[in-house]
Each structure stands twice: as C-alpha cells, then as structure tokens.
Image (tube, rainbow, N blue to C red; front, side, top):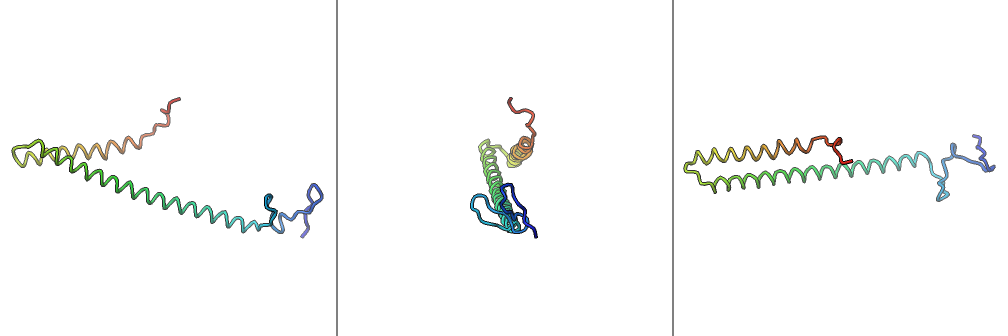
Length: 122
C-alpha cells in the first residue's frame, strides 16, 4: 500500500498502520482505541445504572418510612382527641389518614411533576 506524503515531506501511515498519538508519539490501532472508548462508555453506563438503582431504593425506603411515621402521628392525634366511642375514633382516624395520604401522594407528586421551565426568573 502506498504511503501518503505530508506537507513537510514526512511519510504518514494514518490509514494503513494506525495513527500516532500526538502527545506520546506511540502508534495505536484505531480499532483498539475504539474498543477502549466503548469499554469506558459501557463502564460509565453501568455505574450510572447502579447509582440510579441505589437512588431509587433509597427514595422508596424514605417514602415508606415517612408514610409509617405519618400513620403513627395520625393515630396519636386521633387518640389525643379522645372520642367517646370506638366508631367515632375509627371514623376520625380514617378521615385524617385519607387527608394525609392524599396530600402525601397526590399533591406532592403533581407538584414534583409540574413543568416550570417557562417560569424561571429572568
């Protein structure tokens, strides 16, 4: 295969034998460089997937913990009110739990998913 002649008259073998690293002066095979690049990209993707998995798990545990604490607070609140009958206590407990869980799940999720890109301060 013919070798290309560069501007300064030096022979260049970029296409036939690989390319020369400008900083180190060593030749590398373009396919080997592509393999290294793909391997690095795959490692980054795998580490990102692992981070997202841990983040999702920690958020799920946090939500479950918050809901459990909310449930206990609602029970203590209804017990503090001291309704005369058990049925009134249960009805009040269900009302308080419904309102707190509705606020916790419904409104917070809607607020988190709102698109506020148009409302950034200028």
